[in-house]
Length: 582
Image 1: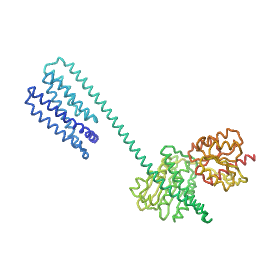
Image 2 (image 1 turned 90 degrees about the vertical axis):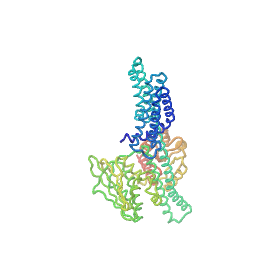
Image 3 (image 1 turned 60 degrees about the vertical axis):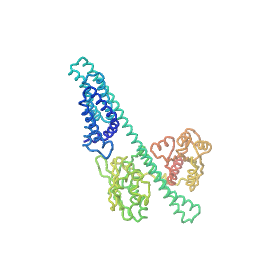
């Protein structure tokens, strides 16, 4: 059955080529008729003309469905087309043998030319398929083999060896030509198919990028509008009691923007194969309690209840708790978004599975469920369940995509079970090794009130807005702040006066933060040992390791969070105070 499926498109190409050969074939039929008449075989003339016309008509009828491409011709039509091809070859090869048998020198030459021409026309019409070539050209190859035998039967064996060798040489040449042309044609087809595939991929990628740009630009307008509105209210010196509410609005909008940008960055990293995972010990119940606690306020505000179901004793695992929390955060966020009322259940467990533990995290909502047509594109980047969902709830459509890709990067998967009107249950399943219990981090150094004096801080960043933001964040600490716009200016300042802490942007034009830090450490100057806190949007483990390798003492991710910056300053100045005391 496979042969008939594959031969149909090839017959379509062959049919178009053979229809072009019809005028030449009719002229050849007329020439053969004239040869029969002039050679005294006029009794065969009418029969030959009638037969040639009949064979040509049969071929036109048999090849018609393939030439017109009207639907998908069936197996019977394909058989009829192949029979017509073989019949056409047998007709003209047989005529060549009849003319060959006359032994007239001019007619013998015509006979050889008929055979050669027939083979060449089948090279053209059978270039797509070896089967088509041998079905149409086989009779001509058989005629070449019979020509020396005819001479022998007629009693002329003088040139048998030469004729046989010539026939073999000609057959070999024709086959060699055909196979080379056929191979080139196949290579051309493959190249064209690859080009079309790449073009389709490029068009799809362009469409995806256009969709991404449209969605992201649309979604960013909401938090940007909130930030601008809040800033205008603060500038207008609104009532003090409203300032906290306005600040909360700006913080929430900033977190929303950060979440969108993180999803975009994570999706790009995973597409490029550049996403790296950590492997550290964590306690499952503690992770889930912290995650649920984060979402309690948004759920309560909407009138929902979060029900966390966990194990009855601590379970330590080894994996990437940050990425696991990111997945669960996406699932809970969606559950709150789509559940109008009721309870959202979060079920966590890690049962033994061989030498590992099978971590299963399920988030069950009481939302409208997911329609079957929406289920098919649920994990597609920048796709929403429907236009109505996109209008009602917004979002980039990347959360679930990133979550599933993270799950698969961990060696697990993210699946969904849902029926319209019955809610949805998203389940993360991944096998992780058992972890070892770890001591809780000592927070004394972080929380110690060591800013008892006015410290000198140098903030290095090439963007003015970032420098102004750092100044605004550090204003409550009353630090002696100096700013620098690039690494060169920073090194000059560090040579001129002492600083207690240096805040260093990693990605800067000219010499970046890492190189600036290396030069500072190698300078031997009065700030050569000063604490350097690096900060950047690049959060890959390799990028962070490069900062520490350059001589930085601490590192923070952008956008800078005030609390984390304060904690980093505490660590830096507390460590400095201990060194001074020693």
